[in-house]
Image (cartoon, rainbow, N blue to C red; front, top):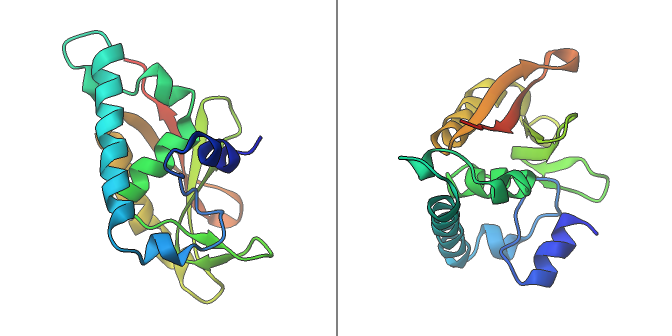
Length: 162
């Protein structure tokens, strides 16, 4: 079952990975999406405080987040004011923003900066990925910027264990 289907079935806030078709109701909406994102962040904070031992339980991801890493990373980025991309029918980006996907290793998420052809997203990726890095590190994730095929940059995200 796809993550999107799981989210809709459970009645939860749908996480935007940047690979979904554009949904103008959510991206240009009335602020309801922002309120839902704030509520999701509050939920993440509560889960951390209830499940993480130690003097600063909010400083690192909880086991619950590790099991839903793609969803958590996507929610944190969007809530941090970073726009998700969107994909057209061909899968090509139709909007500039982050795109998150499962990584090559278990417990890893990849984040790249994409946009439609001619958007200049390739030339903006370093700056925007740094913003993504800042948001994710604030929430206790390891975020390493890497150059991949063709010199394109992306982030490799993992949950910090300490």
